[in-house]
Structure formats: C-alpha cells, structure tokens
Image (cartoon, rainbow, N blue to C red; front, side, top):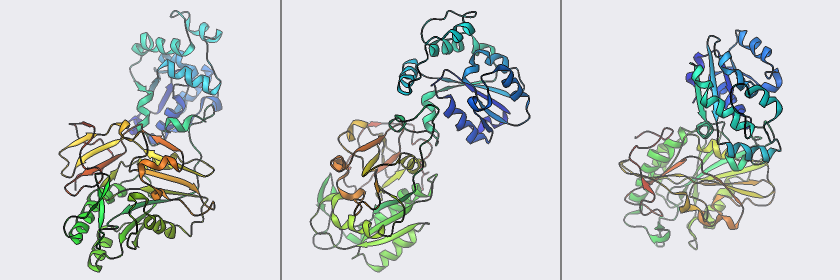
Length: 429
C-alpha cells in the first residue's frame, strides 16, 4: 500500500492525536523497510531533536503528531515527505474519551497556534483546520491520508477488536492457534437419500452424482483453491471432506486437482438425519482430524467449493483471534455474488446476514474444554445460539459464485456493480 513512498528517505507522519498517526507510521515503515521512529521513545516532541533526526542518513518513518505546527519547516529538508492524517473530529474525541486522554484546547496548543489562526474548540479541530486552511499550501512533498483508507492494509485491526486497546496500542496479541479451513466437496450426494442444499432447504441431487462431483472439483479448482493459494498467510490446513462412496477414479482426480501444501482429504460416511450444515457426520469428521491438536486454541473456517476469499481474509480472521474463555465466532460479513463466467457481479448488503453468520464464518475455541464444537456445529445463520459473534465488515472479503447447479444462494442478491472485482481476488482461470 505504501511501497511507492520508499524513494523518500525521511517520512514524517503527523496529525491530531488519536487520528491514527502511530498505526499509519508503522504501516509505512512495514511497506518501505524504513526504520520506525516513535515520538515518545526518541524525543521527537522537541523541535531540535527532529532536526537531528532529519540530518541522519538512515531512512526513517517518523511518528511526530506533536510537531504538526512546524511541518512546513521540516518539508524543506531534501528527500522529506510529509504525511498528514485526517479523521472525523467526532471520532477523534470519542477515541480520546475511550482511552481517558481527552485533549481540550490546552495552553500549549493555544500558544503555538494563536499567532496564525483563531483558536476555538478542541485541540484536534485546531490542528486539522490549520493544516487544511494554511499549512498544506506551503508544502510540495505531501500526502494526505484519510483514516478510513488505512483499512486496506494488512496491519489494520477491525474496530470491534480495538475497543479494549490501551493508549499507543496498535496490534493484537498473536495466539498459538491451529487453523483448519474446511471444505465439503460432495458429502451426501450418493445413495438413495442423496441430497444437497437448494434455496436453503434439502433437495434431491439432480442428474448423475458422478457428474455433479466432477463439476464440484472443477469449481473448487477455479475458485476455492485459487483463493487459498493467494492468501497472505499460508500456515493453515485445508480439510476437504468427500463422500466415502465416491468412485476411486473421482477420488484420484480430486486429490490431483486440489493438491496443495497442507491439504488433507477425509472420507465422510453416509449421512443420517439431514440437518444442513449441522449434520453430525461432518462435525465428527472434523473432530477426528483435529483430535491430536497440541496448541491451546483451535480455529475452524468454512469455505465451500464455489466460494473465493480475498487474499487477506484469513489474515484478518487470525488477527481477530484473542484470548477467550469458551468459544467465539468470527464472521466476514461483506462480499460479492458473482456469476461463474464473471460477467455479473453484485455487492451483498450487510443486512442480509444481520441475524446470524455468513457462509464464511470461523469458530475460535479453547482446546481441552471438551470435544471441539467446530464451525459446522449448526447452520451458519443460527450460530449465535452457540457463542457470541465478532463481525468483520470493513471491506469485501469473499465471493460466492452463482452457477447452474447452485445451492443455498439460488439467486443474486445486493446491488449490481460494473467495475469488476477489486484487487486481492484471484484472476480468471
């Protein structure tokens, strides 16, 4: 996101306190390889110290919100870039109240700004107004960043997960988690009681189940596997569940077409009573696979054969994992419905899934608290009766492919979009 800024040796990131300056500086340092310089640790609130840092030859991303008054002076330094964060003042003040660091118009702020502009209202409004009205016109090498645009970066933490952050905290603790992505290929499509899900209800499989299976292998290769191979994190297992009555020739074709590091293929016995996603045979197959888990947490994620994930979707789910007692669902709520030929695309409205989880939900649970529940414990829109749900809805995270043999989706939903899929999804294959 910020690799193009690498040509600037000194990058100064400023703005009102609580406007996102620290996380923006970390993101820029992460992308450019520059050294991250924290204002508090290096004394950057002193003007003389800032000049000392700017004279050094080392590339730096400098966090300096307290120096916003003099940014136009620092911009005269060769190879310097000024980055200014803009955020809604109401959101800034709400963040200040949350962490107990309310910034009124203090005497120091008034003394710095009263000679250049009227000083009224909260400190954040004075600083931001000075930049917008006067200061930015004096600087050639500048970049204005809207706080909301940072959500595209992999270091971004979703808002529900930041509610417990302390002052200056920008990251969540990483849990030691075993992550298993679960895909059902053709479970339950063979035999006299062969069924699939159609329009949200069990329905007989139409046509030859072997042909149905071949079609699913093709869909999984084009969409599901392609999106897993493009994930920014790869330390997960892919558990592919298939009907044990699948002919050996199709089993061999499946293993060849869907081969990838961490892929495991597990046969599921004939289904008993049909319970959609909550059928016990599927949950039991997952439990047998994870029975040897030695890590303290288990994370299971749903992904169907005709679905795709954005390249950072699994990383967002993992970032949302935090120490818990019991269980917690993590739901990627925003996405697209797309035709198999990619000619039709609809953005799915959030309210479609407000009563429960999407088909792209994950379950985090502690190991050792009894048999794991697994993400296939129930229908995805009924998971709230098992554990609380954390919703990640900042940007589209998935695509459900609508095709001739489609199942629960049945039809397109949401508003049609004309510009195609955003970056991060697999290209057409």
